[in-house]
Length: 589
Image (cartoon, rainbow, N blue to C red):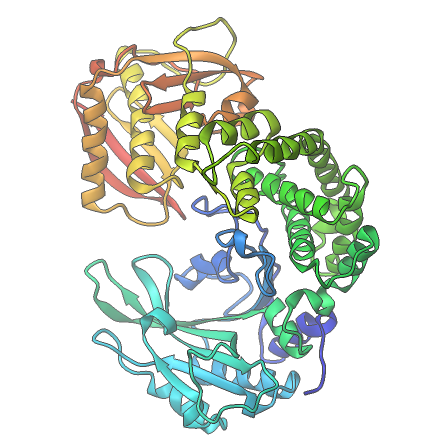
């Protein structure tokens, strides 16, 4: 196979689909602009969901791009040959334009004619059909007409060859392409369980709509959504079984080898983690959203990535007080600035973020590691207790995940549940109040408005407990007649869950919980787990209101003194507010 490389794959992809009438669109930021339900854009199609659901795209009906993506759900896997936290997706879309024949034919043409991948090293999967949707005979026929033998075509079910964003909405079957990444003779028959076959492309055909009752109906407007993983395809083209040995990483890898003075072989895990995490940190901190290391949301991910990279730098005997993070970051900025202008534009911000976070962590890292080594010599049950884990967090800034990782390397376990209990106790606020100036609160201070305002705190906490920690307040509006509360959630809340939320709020009202506040430094409040929105509007000192041990929020007030004053809470309506945001209207009876 003719060798291709990272230097021109993105350009070739864009040029090919432009020749097929597609318009190139810019990559969306890594931080979603209109989807508060996720921290980062995790797939190429995610920024295009509104258009796949019917909105008109200003660039037309045929689109192509390369999209920056970040996924941290398998962060602990980074360090092997294939996992990354940051990656790029190459994608092309049809918004009610062409369909299966063109999508499949162009995918095949790009793979075999542009990238020169031999047909005999390709296999595909198509949807096998079930009680809801028929077998995809059309895709089968197209693949056979292109020269893929039937033995290399596998029929799989919804778990493999079907896509939908959420529980309801536009959806459809897909066809996936696989490459035989091995020097072994290519088997005549494709076996989906044979991991020598690596997925390199996916064409999704959104031609149905799934309703709340589980039924499917055909869409009048059919879309195509395709995706190709950049790092994975480059590894295929360059015949590498280790993604970190491809040309994508040449400059940064050589810089790390120079800084450490060590070979790649024998030090692969730490080197892969450093390269991956610094690259991701560069893309997060260069985003125009202005993310900085912190203890919440995207900032927490950024902090954790930088600190994990620093710890692995110590494994390589790198002087962690030197400017090694900045040197590697500059390699990535130089490598990617042609495609992502914000890297050059925000270069100084990136360097400052890395420098500052490194300085903060380096102050306590060595002491913390010494403390860790000292403590593990004392244990006799192969388990780090909650007190040690919490001291490493509170005194040395070690996230619990870092302590767990260090323990696993020593074949030890950590009392994480005990740590959570200690952490929760740490968050508990004293019931005292102090004077101070605050922003926030209500425009009016009537008794009923005060009750409704307090009820929003209970509602927010109840939604998090029933639906999950992804729930965050996105806005509220209170009158003397009702409350309106907006919150992040990707789909309609079921009737059963709404009942659970309502019952939980009323349970807390019945318990007549005390409502109190404490004046705290804003950063400490955030660190201690207090919820809050529009934090930049608050001064350095804030009020943190606690409702028993059920709710804790940064807020200006006013509030009742006990929840028993609220009466009976009743949800009247739940509806969509905007993409990824739901709205509840409720009353107190």
